[in-house]
Length: 576
Image (cartoon, rainbow, N blue to C red; front, side, top):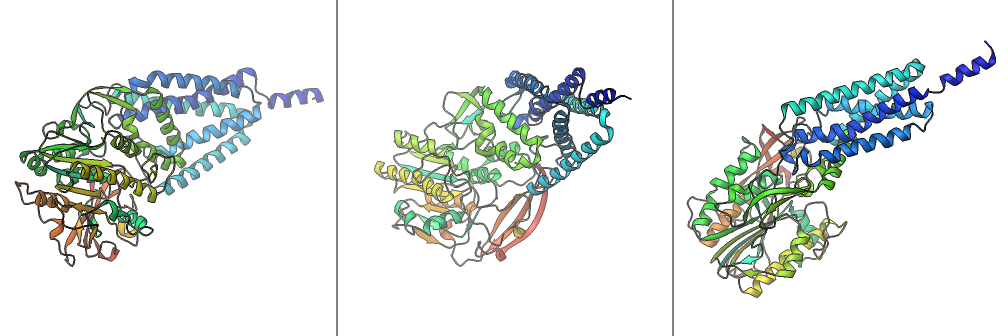
């Protein structure tokens, strides 16, 4: 063979024909665009419709437009490169998508399918990296050994990925009714109506912070011992209290109603049972209290229709208006994190944090829907102030973001990009201090029962037994000011308390005619009592189910030796 023929043969081996280049570029572009911009968003919505505040029909146009735009741009870019670089890019992209498919089929068990499946972060990252390295190495070997047949392998893998994911989409549309249904198909929600209203005569005001662990209180008083005494005149701080649950769900509903979750029902069933059968809410109503509950949807309630006969600020919902641009951005961020398991911790935060899934659509109602936005609440409190209502007795429950991360509140209760737990705690109490100050100016402070606490303390872990994850117990801060308190400044009690004692305390302090025996008040518990308290720690299984670990605590809750695991039960209920 002549040198010219050899050179021509080598050149041919090192170059794709235009037809081959178009085929490879088109297939790779289609796979990338199909999985990231079409399959993942639709499949995520299909399997989580009730978790989202939008329907597929709201954003399908944007999804399709993103798919076609991605395909066109990536195809144009890939056509620029020579065979060598194109093969490298193809191998890398296919490694990611093959690894993603293997991971979600095995370890991930379908991430964001049938709810938000969560497994241990470290394990998920390590396993995904092992899979992707193995797949990339296999593709590299195939490229070296098969040489010119490599394009055929790539084409086969692309077609296989498209076929498998398409089959899943067909199954989604055939078996799930999700195109128009979603979590906004509710009848009522809790509004901001009378948020700053107080009665001239009698008031019960209940502030609930998310994750108000005593360590946040300690963080402040270590630098300023008298900080809380300045604004909490007549309050008693119970520094040895525990929450009943370790997470916002089902803690908040239990604190509002006194009905404890038993682990035998779904969240929707529990919410309905708690809010419609609560003896406490019924007793408040029968004793002439106007009840106003300001809490966000999702963790605190699902449909406020269960409140319509007892709560004054339940408002009728007439459909919703989706924020299509932000919904699309949100879905694509989930798609991105679903594809690369190393981003899973970020995905989990994006999935539920700050009510993201709820605020992507605006519920249409006569009154503004309440969301736990502390900076916004403080701004409105300063601008409008407290005012009198027409009721003789008023019960107000306000759920605040409080001391939970992310820390975006400064010491003046202003929204900032980044703050600290200490600054946010001070900012949260800035809201309380101003509210209390306005109550004093209106002359209603002395004759009011006021509670400040958290739905739970610091949980330490969502996946492991508590006793294996910390060398200290978890405590929840509890502050109570009784009616006509005779004390000045802030008193401290070391009584072995529980947040479950708050409702009995309210009942006794206000003299409500009770339909049942609620138990003893916080102020009746001896500080040296050997009283036993119960704490349920929520733990996540690998298949996204809820395990409830029941602990009993005696003595100082900060001492982990005083915690005893009584039972561990797989509820077979979805993690929430």
